[in-house]
Length: 211
Image (cartoon, rainbow, N blue to C red; front, side):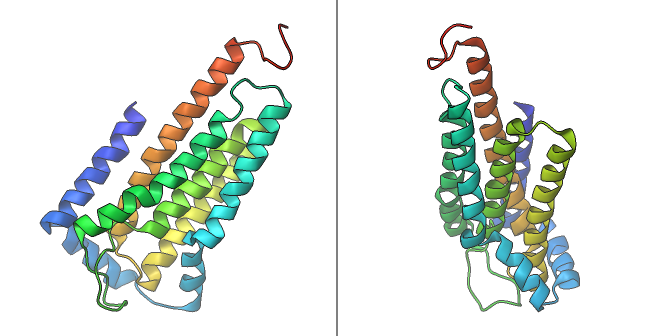
């Protein structure tokens, strides 16, 4: 439960600073000024948060997980992939009204507009790549492969986040807020998946019968 409370508290703190024009925004602006250098590399990295890139990765993970769990006779095999899909659906459901509520303007590197907090691209990357990783991990037997998968997930999320800030598409706090929001959704997914595995471990499969 603590893993869920901490990101939500941090998200609330960042959101409050954005709404109240708090002192963190001065640090945010200085950090953005130091990092923003629009170039081709930052553009490509920011694309990692596009739905066209991230959602197919999650879709593959959902399909493979559902197939593997069903093939091995796991009871309620559909629950982890359904929870992963629900976490992704919640991203626009939460981010869109938050953007309208906070009404934060963009950086000087983008045309004048509002609605930049939190970063939808960052939240998409965190939940899509993070959920895919959480779904794949129980299916992998090698600790080295698991570590490599977690490292790849972190690189994809950090790459997208850095690209969005470097290109000037978002302030650093926009990205940090989405990290927290995405982390809370992933914790929820992990809790549901763990509950499903425990139930399956304690309940004979309908397909295989009593062991």
